[in-house]
Image (cartoon, rainbow, N blue to C red; front, top):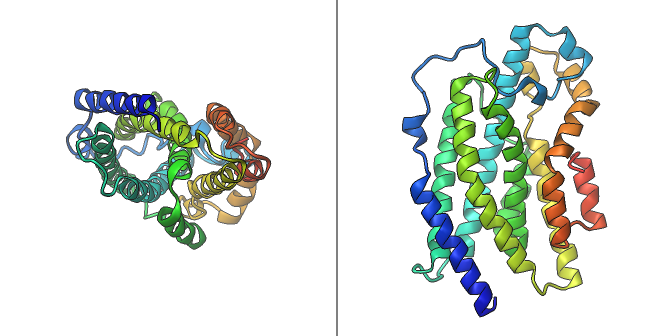
Length: 297
């Protein structure tokens, strides 16, 4: 980076550190963990359910719908934990042995600390929702293991941004929805506020690291980011949520696959993200294949 770029990065990190000092949360104290789960509430906004708008949804009782959305919320949270662990390792590796007096270094550690709290918060939230651990399928786990080891620069930060942006749009809806369990709304509120800083940092890092990159580098990174996006998004709703919610798993999976309402929600949630990736040269034709498969575009 040039001197001007260095100063801009320094200023951004300083602002984010100040924001973190002024507006951060302690989920252990600010989420109501003690009040028993009220099963009259949903886990997500019903419209975000993978079965909303299907004939199966129309046949389900209100209690079944609420049970399903609670398992869906737990599954999304579990996927969030999985990717936050990948994120933390990529950021730690990126800032290994760098200047600890630099605000960027200190912000990186602040972000990692935030992610640790978020992962614990999501884990406790899933437990309170009465759901099991929804670990992504083995293929995604092993590819994630490779990705966190080799991804660097813009590939790492753009992937971080993809995961956070998709979750951010969903959670903004859920945190305002009084049909959603109050403690889940609090979790979403905390995550949205603190992740807004992380997304700002990821956007800036992606733009800076893409400056001067050649055609081949852009092509490789575009596919790497798109592949990561595909596995993150397709892992959010674990196949086992339906059986665990007392539904016919095979029928639910068929109807989920053909649910145009849910696909449209995903696409609309990613409009701004796709515009940003295009502006960085990361929305190539090969990358588009992955985004279309994940219903993100």
